[in-house]
Image 1 (tube, rainbow, N blue to C red):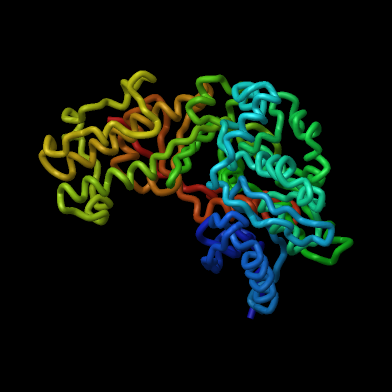
Image 2: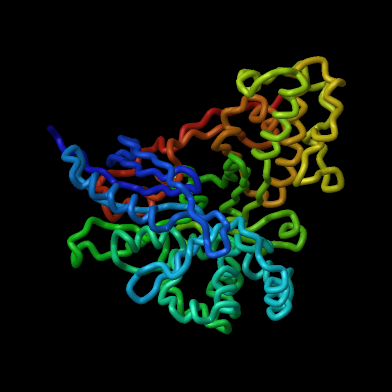
Length: 455
C-alpha cells in the first residue's frame, strides 16, 4: 500500500473541532470532527474547556501518527479569534479560556478608553470597534487591573491558534493574523503594538511576532515535521483566494455573520465605518484587509422562523426556492437604491413587513432576501474600493439562489460569483506553509466559481 504525503490542519471552531488531512494537490483526503463539552470560568460563565481541547489535540495526533496510510509532512492550525490562553512558566494554563461573548465591565472599559484618548481614537488606530471581550487585548488588561497576582504568574499569553501550535511543538510564538483581528493591541498606523500595550506591561507577556507563513519550529533541529504558527480563521479562509486570483476582488464570507473582506483597500478606517462595525484584519503576510460585518445569517434565521410560522412552512421549503424575475416588480425595497438613511444594520426591514400582504410564501421569501441584500449592499459598500472587479461569496448564502441573483442585480458593474472552497480555513492554513512542505506547484483550481448575471 502506498503511503500518502499529507499536511494535517487542526481547525478549531466554537462548536466543531476538526482534524483535516490534505494531499499535495490540496485535496481533502480525510476529515475527523468532534464536539467537546464546555466548562465554566471562575464566574460561572460558559467557556471552552482548554484541558479537554488539549487532550483531544494530543490524542488526535497520536492516532494519526499510527495510521500507516499517511506520512505527515506538515502541521498547522487555525481557530476562532478573540481568545487567549494564559500560561505560566511551566506551560500550564493559569486561567480559564475566557468566552469572548462574556460581558465586559463597563467601569473598566470606560476607564481604559478615557486614559488612552477615547473610544474613537483607540478604535481608529487599532482598527477595532469597541467590542468588549471580543477585543482580546482587553481580556489581559482586565487581569492586569483586577487580579495582579494572576497577572504576575503569566509567562506567555497566546492567542488560541498559537496555543494549539505550542501544545504540539513546545514553542511559543505570536501570529500577526491573530494580533490584527480586532484585538485593540495593534497600531495599524505604525505597524507595531499600540503604545498602551507597552505602558500597561502587556508586551512582556507576548512571544515574538511571526507572519502566518512562518514555522514555529526548525525541523532540521527538532526532527519534527514543519509546524506552522497557526492562523486566525478569517485570515486563513482568505488565503486560497489571494493565491488564485490576481485581479482585485472582495470576498463576502457568509454564515451567522456575513463579513465583507477587501484585501485591496488599505485606507484608514473612518468614524462612520467604525460606527457601522467595520474593522481590519491582517493577511498572513501582514497586509491590512478592510472588512465590515453584518449579522445577516442570524437575521435570516430569525425572520425565516417568523415566515414559516405564518405560512405553515419549514426551512426545507425555503431552501428549495429558486429566484424568479417575476417577483422583482413587487419587491417593496430595491437594493440598488439603498442609502444610509434607510438601512438599519442590526434589523432588516422585513421585521416590519405585514406578512399578510404577500400573495404566497415564495414572494415573501424573495422580499426577505431583498431586505437582507439592502443591508448587505450598504455593509459591503463601506469597504468597497474603485479597483474591485469581482465579488466572491462563500459560505451558506453562496448556495442561496435568491441571494446570489439579487446580489448580482445590486452590483451590475461587477462580476458576482458563488465560490466553492472545501474547508477553506483549513485549506488556507495548509497553503500558508506550502513552501515548507510541498514540492508541487499550487493547483490552479483551489476555488471554483459559479457566476451570476444581473437582470
